Image (cartoon, rainbow, N blue to C red; front, side, top):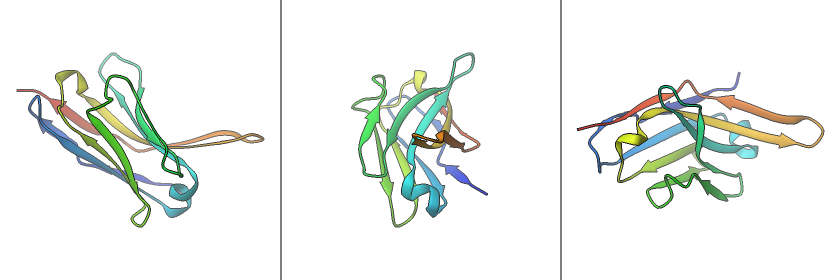
Length: 120
């Protein structure tokens, strides 16, 4: 059973910071690209940032310079450090594990989500 366990969401004022964590099983963590997606009410789920097993990162333009994704291989955990938060960052944030194999296709696993609310 693959599990992605998220933590760290909550209420924060504009300009504040939060750090999200996602713990995964070792077999997933070692070979999958780990990422964070978010979904605001009425919007589609969108990629926030991801990081490959080799450490290459990718960010949505809307969070570049404010958010940092990182991974701790010893703890099988991926983090999303969110700084200078804005009200438009309010959303449910989902941890994702993704692997693309040429003959098999794409495999995705999702966490249950953690709510981030940016409001004064």
